[in-house]
Length: 339
Image 1 (cartoon, rainbow, N blue to C red):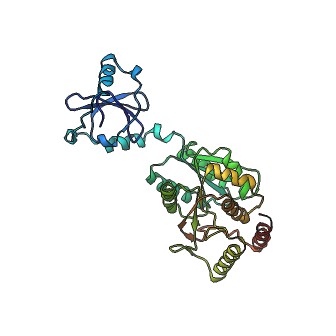
Image 2: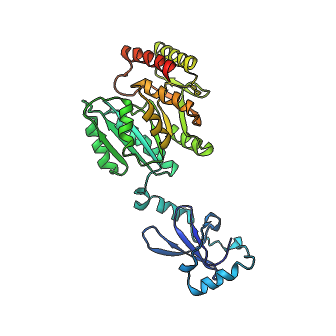
Image 3: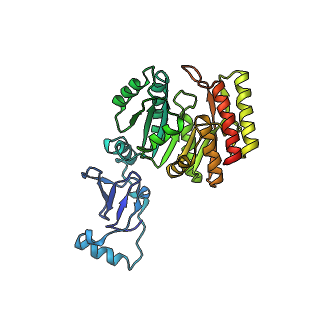
């Protein structure tokens, strides 16, 4: 580790200045401007930053200039003070108000229509699993004037968890899935967008796998799939399974989209990619999700897949009816002919 007077940033974002004085005390500048002196418990977790010599004292500046002309002796590993728990201090700041109010990395969009019973459970599960990732996030609820009181439930959730965590967007009527995403993107702050259903068909536990896979391979899109090894469905009768399999097979045959589950809607997008895809899509309803993946394939976007188990909705009735099937077939042949 370099010598005295160098500035460092810890893994949770605080500026530290190490001084070679006996047991090497560390002065940590907290996000609120306060300082605390402590022993360096884990010096290897500190990452060197460029030092502005003008900000150093005269003695530090002279020492710093002199140290450039000689090899700096590595810090011994036996200087760790057992009385200081760095992880405990890091955990404190991760849970602090400063941490929670910072700009989110992920925006989770939940379009809702008649989901008053499912929404509280869905939000609670999302927060439970997202908190395990130590990522900043926000949940954007877009309600299309649900007659069952979903909007009131969403308002109560916002009061409970705060407006910075629960962002509420209401619309005058049922205007479609694609426009709901467009509406939510206008206020989304995250670099990555997660799209999922609010009816508990998509279990939030798979979000962790999506985030990890995206980080590992730097994918533009990560999509949940029911049809890869390890995926599946639960709660469907034989007729529903047959329709879903047939629809997916037909889409694969005609469109060759490059993913195993074209009709799924549980996905993670890079925000810039999603904005571009949405601006080009013209389909509505379930076909909207298909068109985005077809266009993503043509744009050469990198796509990863996470096997998921799709669970039939806990409360309420399925929104899939004969009209949706007809719309799907129309949209499928539109994509085959014109996209």
